[in-house]
Image 1 (tube, rainbow, N blue to C red):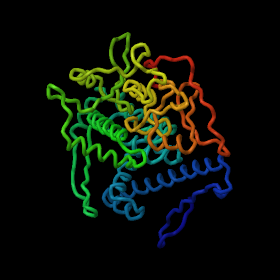
Image 2 (image 1 turned 135 degrees about the vertical axis):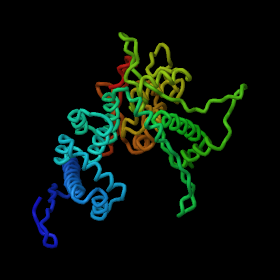
Image 3 (image 1 turned 60 degrees about the vertical axis):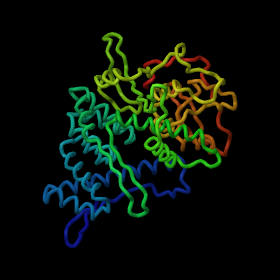
Image 4 (image 1 turned 90 degrees about the vertical axis):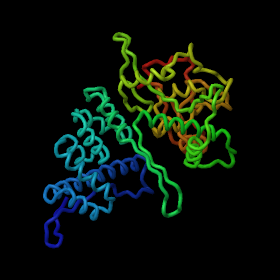
Length: 405
């Protein structure tokens, strides 16, 4: 950072130093280093801007700082307001501030830590250590779990607050006349809505002409319209299932005979008492299964994964193995293709979102299994060589409560 004068006023100029090798001539390792160093430089520049905004706020107030930041940065009013608020909060979070200044975490990480600290007393050092190792979307789940653990009521008060913040809005886009829907739900209601949408979307996908498929967004819009506008299928007693199944996972402590660490399939924690309340009016389906009791291994007798297998995949993979996309929007992928006699067994299945599924089937990406049993997605081999052979463990391992690795 070097000094300069702006209209006669002393200021600072931030100098960003990046590798000088053109990307066309850089090796893969060099490209990775350029992405890393550029990301670190961006975080350091954002930190410098945030501290300037915080000092401006101290001198002239939040509103003046937000207005000035918006003008100088070109970001939205909401973004400027958020940045000023986070910057002010970081004054009391020295570990977060230091990691942000050094480019070890991004503004997104810092914002999550700052907002979490407003709701509960956090273990800042523990959160910063996790933030340095995890991308923002994964760290958001870590922070929610941390908040649950730090709260004195297992997250009951937070869930109640989220329920009070629910809202929905419907209006017309003035540009093209399209109807726009917007809604916010607490995590449990949101999980039900999401599952109902994904279930109906999956049914529509099976009915479509493979040569003329709509986009995923179009299919979701069709699914939502059907759920809202079409009558439900009812049984003889006039009652039908909406398809809004709620998947919940929890560990069972055999010593204390109590549930603990309850949460949704995407890792969002929920209070154990809430699980007990839900159990009173719902069919209980375990989240972890034993091969002797549920059909997790069905060989090549069927191509599509069973409902039980999908629930087990939700519990094991927690999302797309390629990009961590929400498990509700993922498909069960055969590591060894079903057409090549790959079995529809839990050992040979993993979750992939539509985009990553396309990468595997059409662009040569590979699914490999690490020694720990975790599936990972790897780019195509050099010189368009065929994918490396993938072997499925011959010894079928039971899925246990240790699936959450």
